[in-house]
Length: 96
Image (cartoon, rainbow, N blue to C red):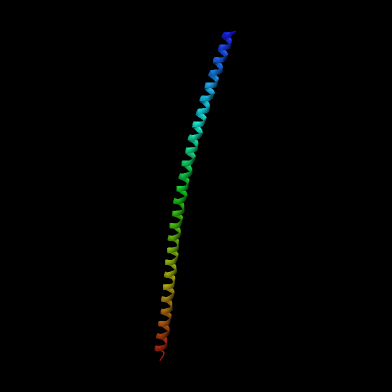
C-alpha cells in the first residue's frame, strides 16, 4: 500500500511539475506576444507618419500645379485682352 501511495505522490509531483512548466511557458509566451504587439504598434505609428507626410507632399504639389495653371490661364487672358486692345487701337487709328 505504501508503494502505491509513493507512486501516486510521485505521479502528483510529475503532474505539478509539468503544470508549473506549462504556466511558465505561457507567461513567457504572453510576454513575447506583448512585446511583438508593441513593436507592431510602433511600426504602424511610423507607417501612419510616413503616409501623412506623403499625403502632405502630394497636396503641396497639387496646389502648386493648380496655382501654375491659374497663372497660365490669367496670362493667356491678359494676352488676349491686350491683343483685343491693340486690335481696337489699330482699327481706330486705321479708320482715321
